[in-house]
Image 1 (spheres, rainbow, N blue to C red):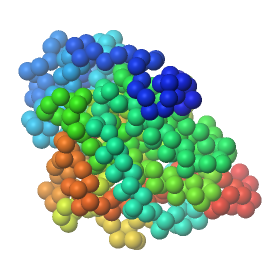
Image 2 (image 1 turned 180 degrees about the vertical axis):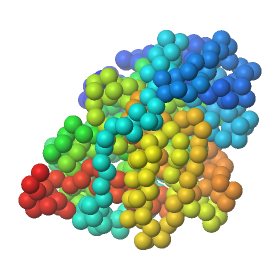
Image 3 (image 1 turned 45 degrees about the vertical axis):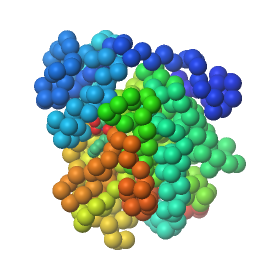
Image 4 (image 1 turned 30 degrees about the horizontal axis):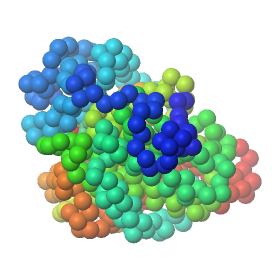
Length: 428
Ligand code: BES
Ligand code: ZN
């Protein structure tokens, strides 16, 4: 696995927090080509006017897609056009070379192939999960969202300060694991992510360390309609809320002394907003290394609710049907008795990082916020107004999501024998 430890990055930067000048990653070139992989529908409705050299392809999963070319600086326009013309998050992947885009399309794995990998999900770890649930604190989630949405002008992957939120998340997560030699964290580079790194914190499994459970959210933000690198892009809901929710779930689990049987990884992805780049780099590298990921839960936008609709929504597309059913079953077991309701949401062609895992053949699911009564979502995403103040100045809506993250960790990761919540003598 290609990773950079924090010490190495600090050496690269001079001091932690200084701007990375060069390093291992390619400099951002606004006029370099970007090869966009999208659905034919998105190509025709939203990309037609700006993209060049379009080519139709059938991907490895049997879907019709289009590879087309824009300039790097046009990627935010692509997102904006999709949202304004199609009134949905369309989703796309982007690459620096046509060859990479072609290889990606060729290697897409069908959901049916994912489903044929036998992974058995069970719900039998109430001893660990139940005591965690009341420990989730809204004020902790609030504080993390507040930091991420106010300490930086933006978290855009190509901005001058793009590495700073990565370093902060790395240090914050590792800080929750003080004294634990089974927990480690790395900054994970991606050639198309500028100076922004993804963050991976791992809790090593005691019995099945090769089986990996992933919980993720994206750390970058974007504001559209101006100078993307300089604009204010607080990204409080999209997706500081997901990072903050994971951070609180991690705090609760580690504070209880929990040790999993499987390896559990927390991931904060770089450069999601320009085509799922950070997550795709990780999923690709795990695939190349033959790593076994047994389940991925993505949290992208958890903190907005207006109206009387369901409190959480399960994404129906670009995710694994068996894992979706399992997440719904976790909801019934652990959350429904407390009061919330679960609905569903359909995104389009790969609107968040769960799609990177799915397309690489790993079982993945995503939970998404309540939104409004018309089935919509937070109206201020991708703007300078994506702030806590526009979400009732509260992180209350994210509490259920942190509880779902804990249920997922506890039931997919299980609990090591002889540790808190684990069996005294487990014969396995
Ligand atoms: N958080 C959004 C995805 C989202 C938005 C899901 C609205 C559901 C409703 C994500 O960060 C995003 O903006 N994705 C892009 C696509 C991505 C591949 C660049 C989008 O929706 O346009
Ligand atoms: Zn977004």
